[in-house]
Length: 581
Image 1 (cartoon, rainbow, N blue to C red):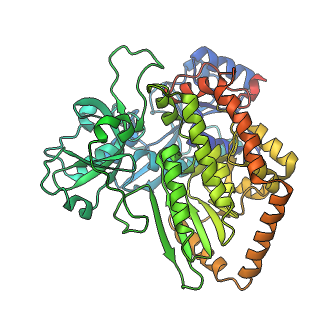
Image 2 (cartoon, rainbow, N blue to C red):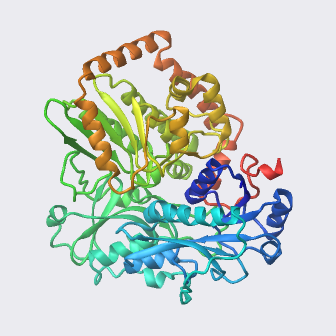
Image 3 (cartoon, rainbow, N blue to C red):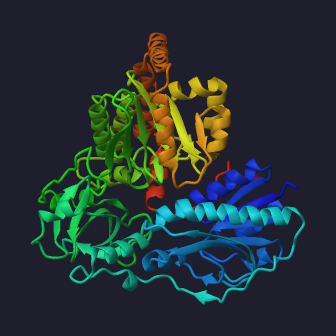
C-alpha cells in the first residue's frame, strides 16, 4: 500500500534526504515542509492530507493541533527511553559502546511517545557528525522502514515492545564540554571535541580570543616528539590549515574554529566556521608549517593520503582526500591537484580517488568564500571565481589522466560540484547508503562548472542531463546506477567497503584486456577532444558562472550567505513542497 507522507524537518539534512529518497523508491508519495511555524505546519497538513507525518530532524515540538489530527512520528537519535536534545552528544562524549535510533509517536511529551520501532548499532570512535551520517542514518532508515511497513499494513497501534526506563538528558552545556589543557589527556580532549562536532563546537580560546573548536585529529607520536618540551595548551604548528595543540600526553590537530559572538549579535551578522589557520591567519603565520608526506604511516594525519597495492605489474593507487564536510576551498583544490600530479608519476594501472568517509566532495567551500567578503581588498565574488577555477583544474587533471584507469570511490555523500568531480573519472563506485545531489540550482540558481556539460550528457544523454539538473532532488546510489550515472553500487555492509572496492580495482588492473581497454579510452578522449575541446566546455560554463558571481542577480550570494550563517528558512522550496504547487 502506497502512503502519502509529509516529511516535517528543521532543514532538509542528510538524514532527511536519505529517508525521502528511500521512501520514494518504495512507491510512497513524499512531500516536504520545513518547520517554520506552527501555523505553517498546520497549513501543510491541510494541503497535503498525509496518511502520516514523519519528523526525522526537528528542533521544536510538533503542535498538538497537528499530532491530534494525523499520526505523527519522530525519528530520535537515541535508544528507547532516551530523551533530550543532545542525545548523540552525550553518547559520543561518554564513549557509550552501544547506541540506537527510536521512532516514536508524537503525543506532546518530548521524546516520550509510544515506540513503534527502533534499531541499534555499535558506536565508533568518531565525531558526532560522522556517526550521525553513517550509523544513525542507517539505523533511522531501518526503524523508519519498519514503521512505514506496519502502518501500510493497516496497523494503528504500536507494537508490544519492552518498555525502557525513561532517562532525560538535557542539552549538553559548555561546562560539560570544556577542555582543561593543563589536565586533560588526548583521549578526553578528543571525546569532547568529537561530541561537539558541527554544532555547537567546544567553547575555548585561541591566542586569548574566545572561539568554538571542532574537526580534531590525534597527532602522531612522531610529530609530537619535536614538541616534547612544550607545555600543555601551547599552539605548536600548522598543517593543512589545522593548528597543532599540546595535550598533557600528546597533541591534537584542530581543523575548524568559529569566533564567539558578542551577546545580542543579530542573525546573519555573527561568526561562522572557518579553517582554523585561516580564521587566525596572522597568528598562525608565526607558527612553523609541518606538512605531511603524501605516502606515510596511517597514524600521521593530513587531509590527503596515498597508498599503493598489488603486484608491481598491475599496481593500484588509492588517493584519499578527506576535507571537512566535503568542502574544497581554493587551497585544498591546489593541494589535491599537486597530489594528482605527483601520483601520476607512479606506475599504477588503476587510481582509486577515495573522497572523505562522510562526503566524497561537496564542491566549492562556501564558508571560505563568505570569509573573503570580510577581508580587506577581497570579495566573495573574487574568491568564488578563484575557487571554481581551482575545482576545474582538479577535474581537468582527472579527465586528462589517459594513461591509467581512474575510479571515483564514493564512501560518503556528494553534492553539486563534488558530484561532477566524481564523474570526471572513468568509473564511479558508490556505497548503497550514499545520497547524491548532482545539481547546483539550490544554491541561488548557480549554473555550475567542473565540466558537467561534457560529463553528464555522455552518461545520460542531453535529455537525461536536462531532467536531472532540473529535478533538484536527492538521488540514491541505487537509482544513480539504474540510470547510468554511476557504474557500481556496493550493497554490502559499510564496514569493509574499502577492502571490497580495492579487490575490485586489483581485478581491473590484472584484467587480461586492460591494454585494449586503455587504448579504447585514449581513442574516445581524442575523438571527444576533436569534436569539442574541453577548454570550450570550461569557457562556456565559466561564462555563466561569472554572471552568477559578478552579475546583477544576487541570488547566489544571498543563498550562500543564508547557508553559511544558518539563517532560518522563510518558506519551503516548491520542488520539495509538492503540496503547495
